Length: 210
Image (tube, rainbow, N blue to C red):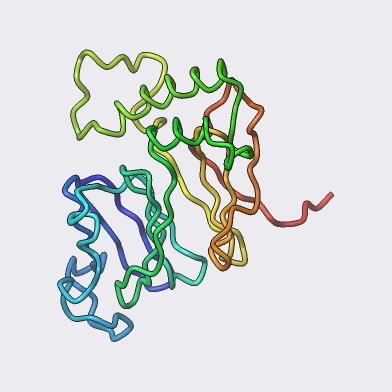
């Protein structure tokens, strides 16, 4: 099992394994829910085999606040957004593989994401180390040193804002804020933080009370 996520709006669990198969089940019966909110009767009617077909698996998942959509960050560095009730794949965003990041570094069209070469080389080295942990299954080989960090600390997270419009996630060049309505990158935060690789994040949009 790679990932388990609870959809509180519908009282349903989503789980996915190393092979990329996504399953949806009732936490009490462990069966496919039958209370009518799902628009399918079997997983084969959905796009929940997408990860398996693309030979990838989930690293992180997040639901919108109304539970209607589910975003999954996959090992192929793509973010896939599903309509949860129908299981249909709505959108796929490319979060750049290491090869694509290297290509963007020398492409004049991507000046926003470009870094100083020394900083860039350092970040690529960090990404290669992170990917070693992403590729692990349940057992951690002895050759992987995790003295100062647990396996879970290498796992990324996703976060929707309160409007469910913006999806936030970490990348080698900083925290990206993706507008899922216009399909554009709205913000890039922490690009200059060369000593940090942001993997996990949380959003607080409330007003502090004195």
